[in-house]
Length: 274
Image 1 (cartoon, rainbow, N blue to C red):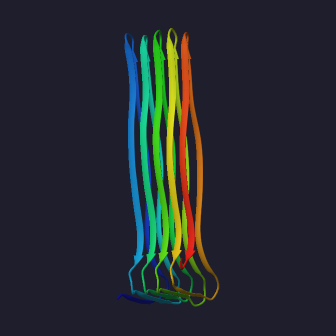
Image 2 (image 1 turned 120 degrees about the horizontal axis):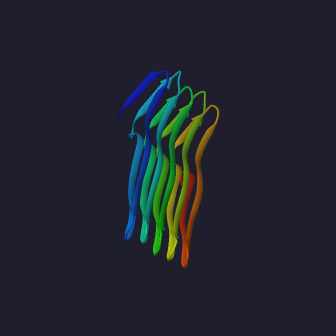
Image 3 (image 1 turned 180 degrees about the vertical axis):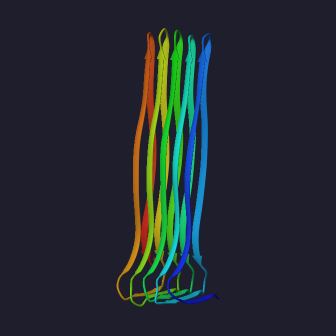
């Protein structure tokens, strides 16, 4: 077993911060038969951040605080554009897929002893932000113009604080705070436009979003002592903002369609000896 005895503060910390910027575009122009512009984009981002205190560990700090923190943050910006123009037929297509999986875990094993004169704080923090702009446009001088924008986004966010059975946590003069926290911000603007001066125009937008978050503070059969407060918290904040639009114009036939599918699943739990 590991024993850590010190004066002053004790800190166990794992932090990951990701900033992703993607800009992609295509442009096609033809004076004869067909102009076609196509943009394909795919992003897969997975982060796992953990702080673990193994079974049987003893930590004692005199005159200071004990802090254990796992934090992961992802800030993603994606801008994609596709455009095509032709005197006859024009096709503009924008296809994108985004997969984000981000987890933060703060774990205290079995039969662990943590004692501090000051505060004892154990936190798992997860923050995910996605900003998406995708557009397509097609212009035809005579026959057909078709524009289409398709995006599929899958987002998974987890923050877990786990204290296993048999553990003792003591704050001789302060407070004990066990906190799992998730924050999500998903903002997207999808658009498609087509114009056919002498024929048929069609524009379509399909947006699919599947987002799930899990925020759990799971405290087993443990002993917790604090001179002041004991807080066991599971907090989650989600913000979703979408704009989806399609516009089509033609001298003969014009069709515009927008389809948006959103699946949201949230789980927030703070449990003691459950």
